[in-house]
Length: 252
Image 1 (cartoon, rainbow, N blue to C red):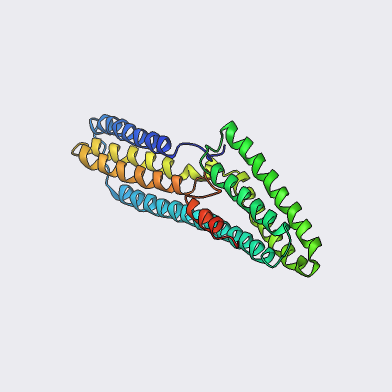
Image 2: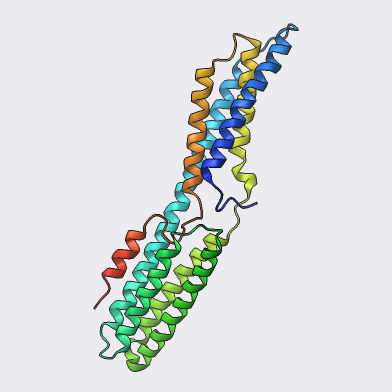
């Protein structure tokens, strides 16, 4: 199962409800055993909180790393597009304007793509448009190179950079993140809350305020981590301004 495109808020809400439900169920179980003379201590609870904290930290760190990687791919593509524009600036033919217009069309299609939901039919249609405009950019760059062969290598390098960055981001979008790895955190949180509730049932009762606060904290971090690592809007990654600045700063 792939979490890409899933609502991070709904996942966090489901986790919060599951944790509270587990706490109440654990309390009922603990009360049952306590009434029959069983005893326990809190050493496992403390260890569980520590392990869960480490898992949350790892998940959030991994999400930030994915975000940084996508941002670097975006910057690489912007640099390559700017390089192509700067190269054709030395052309004294109409092909230079065609290349710059083609770059603007390509960037505009990517900016609009980032505004759509990942699983929507419009996204698939717009993605096809992005590919079409990329092919158009390659074609007009070939024409420009034929007009001035000494610029061929520079244009080839620039276009290869654009294609490489685009392909890398396509792979980032297409890769399926296994839900098994993501589920380690929520399953650990639910089991921990079950034990906390059990511990409370065995001793002085469940402290609702502390349980709710802990649940909100864990769910909030989980929400933030999942949202940060989402593949949605991966073309712009919340940085449409970077594409816009690059487009508006193209060589005239």
